[in-house]
Image (cartoon, rainbow, N blue to C red; front, side, top):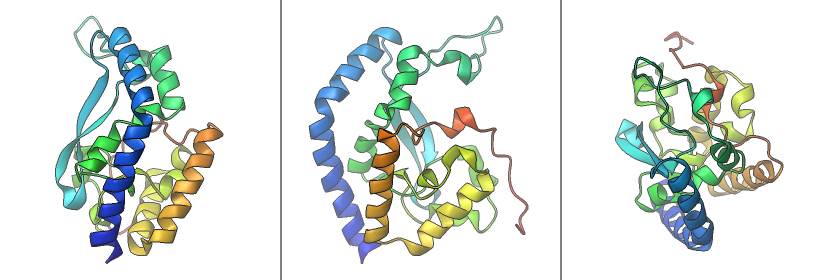
Length: 204
């Protein structure tokens, strides 16, 4: 009942209210990033959602599009702008994902949506992280985030899927808010701070 009916309804309601309340900040960040990123304030990327169905995640664009002599994008850490670094550190880059929640593609709490390429690299257990909608924050994000391995992160994701409930979601939200205000890197991107996930042994 909670997973199929109550949680989706609460997600849309809470995300709508949050987006309205945060709209002034949303607009200011949009304008600033529009100016610093040559007219590109948003970052879109395909990510797997519920049951692995792909959707386009939307975030504030924290990196520019500078390329090397061969026309290839420079490494992520060389493209992060000062404004982008602030937007990430303060978790402001997550605000646009409220639109994904309102559209029913994401949940406020759930396993973080990662690269589409990872879908074929998960073992059977790790695949269960896609049994629920991905979230803006999740159990792994409040339990080490970038200080733990991919395998540990996915174990937290699957544990959440198996134990999902209203009180657990409240606990995750509460701890997320605390970590954001303490600037503990809750929104730091795995894409930047961790090496690419190449797969886990099938029997792990």
